[in-house]
Image (cartoon, rainbow, N blue to C red; front, top):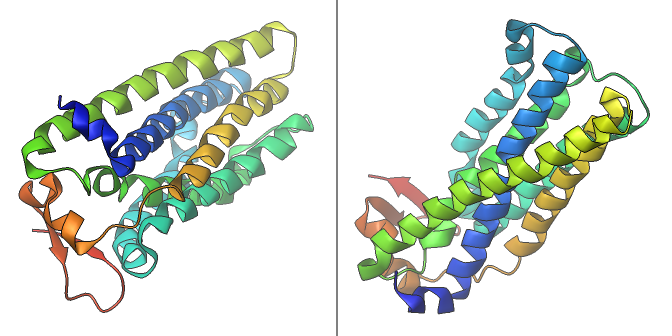
Length: 231
């Protein structure tokens, strides 16, 4: 690992966003699955179908993200984070009010959450690797993958322990879930704030990236903004 990589603001902020994103996403699915199966006593099939709108949102966002990147650039990460905050808020409010979060009432919130996850995840690697030199491409990608895995482990440990602690305080399942989701509200709000710190990419910096050498082609003919296309 080349120490000079960590002097690049775009790289440092990018891996921090990746770390926080993975703190939130795996821990959300773990806690929410536990709530559905143990709290609501739903079977595996019903639990799985509850997440279908989220998956559809991620797929739709993967299609839309290149178009949004072309128009608003790095701010697509802020849009994705804002949608995730909105989806989490839609679950926190009724949960804290001791209402059961039934699957049928979660479809819209799950769809919004999935859209936010897709808009954050799709351009995240480009945001992290955009200013890395070609010679550092492999190391930069390795650091990114490491922080993703580390973020997932830390997030599951923190949120999982907090959720179990809330249940141990004789809270209802809905209350415990609502309080655990506050962590995700903090995570995604932090991503929203950090997305504005990312520097605006330039053609000069993009041209030096390992991402280009790895097979991501930068289309300079796009009329508006920047458009990433896979070869």
